[in-house]
Image 1 (cartoon, rainbow, N blue to C red):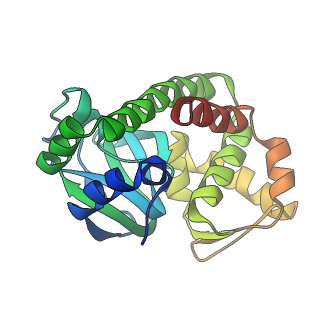
Image 2 (cartoon, one colour):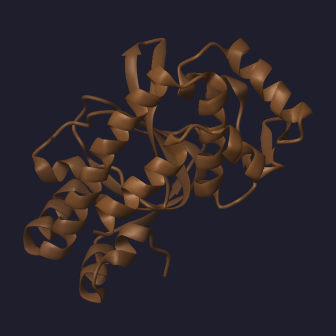
Length: 229
């Protein structure tokens, strides 16, 4: 049975309660599964692939404020009373997710304290992730952030190779494409990555970790402290 790390934390009874009301759905590359400010209809627990949490500034400007793979969920804010999606959510790496209607999720949240505790612990992590994302974007350079972002994408793709375009990366980092292109070209020249026809491959993970900002390790530490406390 496919699960994600949040579901794995739950007791067997809570896992069964959650999954019995869910369906496995495909996450299609570049699919917008949530639109900001619109009524929440479903929650998602990715089991493969990953999604980006997007803050829209205008119809032509957006930036990534979080990335979610099988360690997390989309839509947990419904548990603290939000009715509309606070952010947009776009599929960054194709895969699959358990999908549940909001009404069903609210029912299990109200009836199961184990699910409610895990949901709230994850929201605590997401709050800290948002703060870290803001500080990272302000204090760290494009090279550091790109290295971090590639590592985070590899972690969630569960593969050294994944589909990616420089245009998409520039949108996620909130920088001009030319800035991403020059640094990605240097990474390729130095043997850190390979890039061909939209397929990016991590060639030297350790070298990327040395270049990445401290936020990469810090976010992993925050997740552990919040969700596994």
